[in-house]
Length: 97
Length: 241
Image: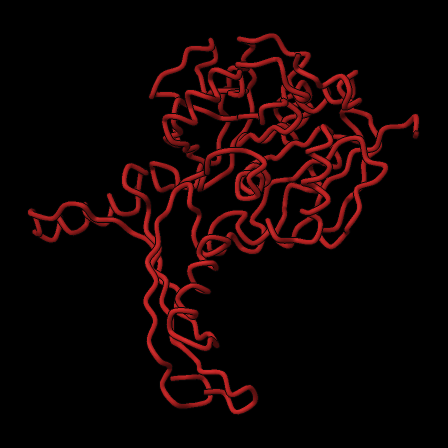
């Protein structure tokens, strides 16, 4: 909870991945690297990005909805990417760490 | 109304093709041109606008994702919706897709390598503000310089683009043959350039502004950049009825 506002803080994580059917050359080349290391049974490698952030919100649901809106507007491109949002109460501390 | 058309070239933080585009418009095409800072909030008085190549905002998050929210983009959307010619080159193309002025997206090159070489594109539509003087089937030799140039759109969108004549250019051989061999970056349908439905907004990955004078190795880009000088400058002539 921030001292200034009294609004609870939430630690959120957005996981952004290429949509099924969208080419992912980065994932393909990671799979190639794994195969070179001897992991022959690996498939379905997809490479995306994880964005973590701390948000102020009255409730966990509100925090999740806010981060989902951020994904729709900026963090993900719905034409080529999907996203998942997880939210947990931020740990006590000035930066929530 | 000004009798001397002026083309605006938007400079975003990280643009690097803006000087090339301004130079090509002024000295090769021979039209007035000025830089437009990304913080400007009016495009009044401009006849056409170019979004140049480069790495706006360091390409962070996704190419063009941050530039889309620059202050100049609100006026640019209105400018485009009014029917004025807008050309996005390379990063400018990426910004136009992020801003939803053009459908689809640009993905990482299939090779995972940055592509910097000369290529050929076949013009597929002469019904846009930037290709009106170029017969369909014409092959232009233009350089590319991109890491994320693989055009992607879902199959329904591709079908719609083809039906509307919105596919402006495809990578080809010098003779105009299209094959996977000429599709270096892995674009769907070898697509190198598309337009919006009206035809006034065009995005392309190759760099016509870097091929606007034989002195720099090629002059074919002048065909694209010069078209906007014609009657297409008036939005009323852009009606596709």
